[in-house]
Image (cartoon, one colour):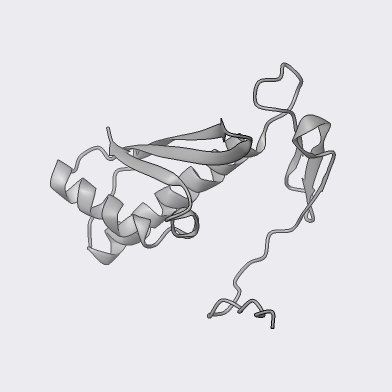
Amino acid sequence: MTQQPTKPAGRVIYTAKTHTTGGRENGASRSSDGRLEVKLSPPTSNRIGTNPEQLFAAGWSACFEGALGVAAQRKKIKLSPDVTIDAEVDLHLESGNFFLGARLNIAIPDLDRSTAQALVDDAKGICPYSKAIKGNVEVEYRLV
Protein backbone atom coordinates (compact mmCIF):
# COMPACT_ATOMS: atom_id res chain seq x y z
CA MET A 1 0.00 0.00 0.00
CA THR A 2 1.34 3.45 -0.94
CA GLN A 3 1.22 6.05 1.77
CA GLN A 4 -0.47 9.25 0.72
CA PRO A 5 1.47 12.47 1.40
CA THR A 6 0.08 14.51 4.25
CA LYS A 7 -0.79 18.15 3.91
CA PRO A 8 1.10 20.51 6.21
CA ALA A 9 -0.95 21.89 9.07
CA GLY A 10 -1.93 25.50 9.14
CA ARG A 11 -3.51 27.99 6.81
CA VAL A 12 -1.84 28.70 3.47
CA ILE A 13 -0.98 32.42 3.48
CA TYR A 14 0.76 32.53 0.09
CA THR A 15 1.51 30.27 -2.87
CA ALA A 16 4.32 31.18 -5.24
CA LYS A 17 3.71 29.97 -8.77
CA THR A 18 6.31 29.87 -11.51
CA HIS A 19 6.52 28.39 -14.99
CA THR A 20 9.93 27.12 -16.08
CA THR A 21 11.08 25.87 -19.46
CA GLY A 22 14.50 24.63 -20.54
CA GLY A 23 15.81 23.96 -17.02
CA ARG A 24 19.19 25.24 -15.86
CA GLU A 25 20.91 24.63 -19.20
CA ASN A 26 19.27 27.36 -21.25
CA GLY A 27 15.92 28.00 -19.66
CA ALA A 28 13.69 30.70 -18.33
CA SER A 29 11.38 31.03 -15.37
CA ARG A 30 8.51 33.42 -14.90
CA SER A 31 6.18 33.96 -11.94
CA SER A 32 2.43 33.84 -12.47
CA ASP A 33 2.12 37.50 -11.41
CA GLY A 34 4.89 38.64 -13.79
CA ARG A 35 7.04 40.12 -11.01
CA LEU A 36 9.84 37.62 -11.61
CA GLU A 37 11.21 36.79 -15.02
CA VAL A 38 14.68 35.30 -15.24
CA LYS A 39 16.84 33.56 -17.77
CA LEU A 40 18.57 30.45 -16.47
CA SER A 41 22.03 29.12 -17.18
CA PRO A 42 24.40 26.62 -15.57
CA PRO A 43 26.51 27.89 -12.63
CA THR A 44 29.78 27.98 -14.57
CA SER A 45 28.35 29.30 -17.83
CA ASN A 46 29.15 32.66 -19.40
CA ARG A 47 25.61 32.83 -20.77
CA ILE A 48 23.23 35.49 -19.52
CA GLY A 49 21.10 34.20 -16.70
CA THR A 50 21.11 33.06 -13.12
CA ASN A 51 21.03 29.56 -11.71
CA PRO A 52 18.89 27.77 -9.13
CA GLU A 53 21.63 27.99 -6.49
CA GLN A 54 21.72 31.78 -6.73
CA LEU A 55 17.94 31.95 -6.58
CA PHE A 56 17.91 29.73 -3.49
CA ALA A 57 20.66 31.81 -1.84
CA ALA A 58 18.69 35.02 -2.43
CA GLY A 59 15.40 33.59 -1.19
CA TRP A 60 16.88 31.87 1.85
CA SER A 61 18.90 34.89 3.00
CA ALA A 62 15.91 37.21 2.60
CA CYS A 63 13.70 34.78 4.51
CA PHE A 64 16.28 34.34 7.26
CA GLU A 65 16.65 38.09 7.72
CA GLY A 66 12.89 38.30 8.16
CA ALA A 67 13.07 35.45 10.70
CA LEU A 68 15.75 37.37 12.61
CA GLY A 69 13.32 40.28 12.79
CA VAL A 70 10.58 38.04 14.18
CA ALA A 71 13.00 36.54 16.73
CA ALA A 72 14.12 40.02 17.80
CA GLN A 73 10.54 41.26 18.10
CA ARG A 74 9.63 38.28 20.29
CA LYS A 75 12.55 39.11 22.60
CA LYS A 76 11.77 42.85 22.46
CA ILE A 77 15.16 43.60 20.89
CA LYS A 78 15.54 46.40 18.37
CA LEU A 79 17.55 45.27 15.34
CA SER A 80 19.77 47.66 13.45
CA PRO A 81 18.65 48.32 9.86
CA ASP A 82 22.26 47.43 8.97
CA VAL A 83 21.76 43.67 9.45
CA THR A 84 23.22 41.87 6.43
CA ILE A 85 23.35 38.27 5.30
CA ASP A 86 25.69 36.86 2.69
CA ALA A 87 24.47 33.45 1.55
CA GLU A 88 26.67 30.83 -0.08
CA VAL A 89 25.13 27.76 -1.70
CA ASP A 90 27.47 25.05 -2.99
CA LEU A 91 26.45 22.56 -5.65
CA HIS A 92 28.38 19.31 -5.02
CA LEU A 93 28.87 16.29 -7.27
CA GLU A 94 30.05 13.02 -5.79
CA SER A 95 29.85 9.61 -7.45
CA GLY A 96 27.30 10.90 -9.96
CA ASN A 97 25.04 12.38 -7.26
CA PHE A 98 24.32 16.08 -6.83
CA PHE A 99 23.71 17.69 -3.44
CA LEU A 100 23.87 21.10 -1.79
CA GLY A 101 25.92 22.65 1.01
CA ALA A 102 25.14 26.10 2.35
CA ARG A 103 26.30 28.89 4.64
CA LEU A 104 24.80 32.10 5.93
CA ASN A 105 27.29 34.78 6.98
CA ILE A 106 25.25 36.99 9.27
CA ALA A 107 26.22 40.47 10.48
CA ILE A 108 24.11 41.89 13.31
CA PRO A 109 25.66 45.22 14.32
CA ASP A 110 25.00 46.86 17.66
CA LEU A 111 24.35 43.59 19.55
CA ASP A 112 26.72 41.64 21.74
CA ARG A 113 27.74 38.27 20.31
CA SER A 114 25.71 36.12 22.73
CA THR A 115 22.49 38.07 22.05
CA ALA A 116 23.12 37.94 18.30
CA GLN A 117 23.76 34.18 18.50
CA ALA A 118 20.54 33.67 20.44
CA LEU A 119 18.62 35.48 17.68
CA VAL A 120 20.30 33.35 14.99
CA ASP A 121 19.42 30.18 16.92
CA ASP A 122 15.80 31.27 17.25
CA ALA A 123 15.61 32.32 13.59
CA LYS A 124 16.65 28.81 12.47
CA GLY A 125 13.37 27.55 13.92
CA ILE A 126 11.33 30.37 12.38
CA CYS A 127 12.65 30.56 8.80
CA PRO A 128 10.73 28.14 6.53
CA TYR A 129 13.78 27.72 4.26
CA SER A 130 16.01 26.76 7.19
CA LYS A 131 13.42 24.31 8.46
CA ALA A 132 13.02 22.79 4.98
CA ILE A 133 16.72 22.06 4.54
CA LYS A 134 17.43 20.97 8.13
CA GLY A 135 18.79 17.44 8.02
CA ASN A 136 18.88 17.50 4.20
CA VAL A 137 21.67 20.00 3.54
CA GLU A 138 24.89 20.58 5.45
CA VAL A 139 24.40 24.13 6.75
CA GLU A 140 26.55 26.61 8.65
CA TYR A 141 25.26 29.78 10.29
CA ARG A 142 28.21 32.12 10.90
CA LEU A 143 28.12 35.35 12.86
CA VAL A 144 30.56 37.75 11.21
